[in-house]
Figure 1 (cartoon, rainbow, N blue to C red):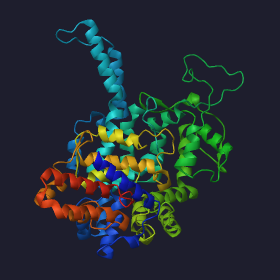
Figure 2 (cartoon, helix red, strand yellow):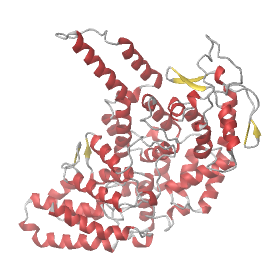
Figure 3 (cartoon, helix red, strand yellow):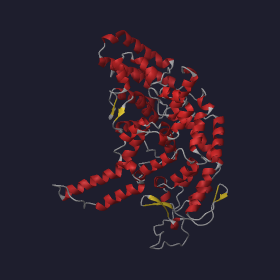
Figure 4 (cartoon, rainbow, N blue to C red):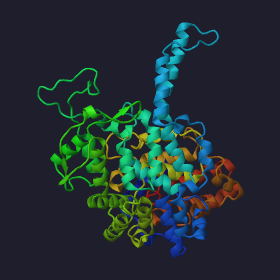
Length: 535
């Protein structure tokens, strides 16, 4: 307890300093190329591991990016091994809902097990139904975390996090949990493909249709109109739902209040009536669809039935305001909270030239001179998800069960796939860098290093292996681990060096357990430092 009070008192001093941005001139890089690589790895991965900087330097930034932009070509055996037992990741939405339907139809009629009476059998089958209902909601968020930590396809994992928030759905909203495995596969498929195809895939996916209520959106019924029994539209309620139409323009394409008004939202909602779900798959319900011409943002949308909605989505995907809005948002995620204007202009041109090729757009941001300018270095803050993942990667911890980390992410305000607001989670520093959040991060690092984080062990990590070989672990921390060779600022280094000097004077008299505890204190100081909270 005394140790943690020491860390908290040190944290209080560091938190005061964390409000000020850490500029590139405060980072001691060995050369310009190495400094660029470190910066790239902070943004294009979830944290550099020992040896990553040297590997990229040997390959070259351009070659490394080209490889990362073809994730299907990169073997990922560690992730494959850790996800081997996650059954729902291999199922389409139709296959998963079919399993659920089959279990529901079985009721209590399944064959009994030996020595099982009728009541025991009913209880067992109910447990099996409950497990299956919650299986995807348990497996998919854990899979997201596992891939972020262990995948060799780091840029793909980082960009999935961006698009997961851009096209946000909330796994806790009723049936969304059944659709989320297939939805994640759609995100994986499209992150480096065509934005237009990506937008269409999300628009037709049951997870999005259910999350934003478009599956029940129907043309308003005319006065005196009767619902006829036995027809496709017999369940019509006459209710037009504007939720998806509004978010499609405000969040997914042109941006909030950017060239459209409430009438445009209503017109787009009418166009998308009939886009619904049947047996876990997209379906078009003709009886729900609003007839007549509609205009969106000054354009009359052509087409009949489902083609009308597809034409509207293609129009929005190709709109000039869409590429400006989405490129700015991507630049904010990858480059700076206040993106460089020239970078945005240049990348918008790439979008226009390639017709929204997200591979080309992503590379254009990460290769732009402004991305590596000192105004971009260590100026973005890590979200709780990015902090937790980078901490585990940096320390080489073994996450055998992701449940403990998932619980801590909820404590830090960012449970995976559980953002109710369609905006998704923010990645802006102002939304995460407050003292309450940082105190929880210190606790996370301290518990991780002391094996107090359920499901995560660190005893056999590269850090402790190195410590057993060489008690001078503080230099290892700085050169190979937490900062990949860079030095944090003086406010972080002062308490760190004082502790180091104390250990240096006494380490020959200290037992391995005492050295290990001192190591944990030093590592927690660094993992809790303002510099480690930044990218």
